[in-house]
Image 1 (cartoon, helix red, strand yellow):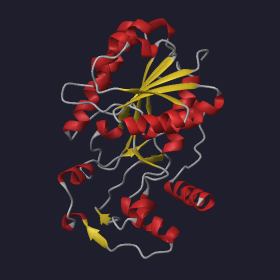
Image 2 (tube, rainbow, N blue to C red):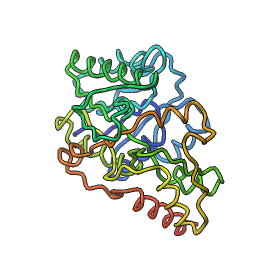
Image 3 (cartoon, rainbow, N blue to C red):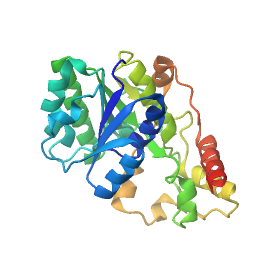
Image 4 (cartoon, one colour):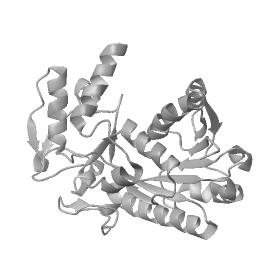
Length: 292
């Protein structure tokens, strides 16, 4: 890509990880946030911040953009970025080499623990997942209609510094809930950022990727390993049927699948820094100890 300027609609945890990777390489990064205090933190990290409440987008924001990342979650009436910014993005048109949309592997729904890939059927079990499917279709259709390189990334459970089982254990909120045969796919945020960066370099490789590490695992195993690293006793095992979970938490257990990352690794030539949660948690803890 010749124009190394990235604009992020929704500058969240994943976008920040991507910016940390790109800025030292000479990229200019800009993004939106609703919070003035977050805008200050973005600027301190070398990111141009725009306060945006979801209303009409100033096309001038995109004047230098060669790539756009969309990570705003869909609402009842669709993706807010698609609704508010598609005309501004279309105006930028021929100058864009990459438009990435961050979706979720929740669109696959329940596959009873079987492996899924990018060609698997979608069986959404929640309204959140159905909204994601509609948003994916909107962005894919927009790209096809305008001749723009829209690439969809279906993300798993995201963890990393400040957002991992280590933090929930320390906070006393960790639970080891057991549902027979249940697994989840996850990925360290830095590996997600690496995949996005690799796609920026190869925008024509594919227009849809699953992002995940190599080992879908039961959630109680991750908590137990975090406790082992911290040298504390794990919380007791609790059967799913006996767990006091919110409706939202229960909905995550409705889906059981193993997400294949084969296309991601083969098409993008990506070698994961953290192929399982074990390497990821070890690295987070080591970094914490080194930095105090």
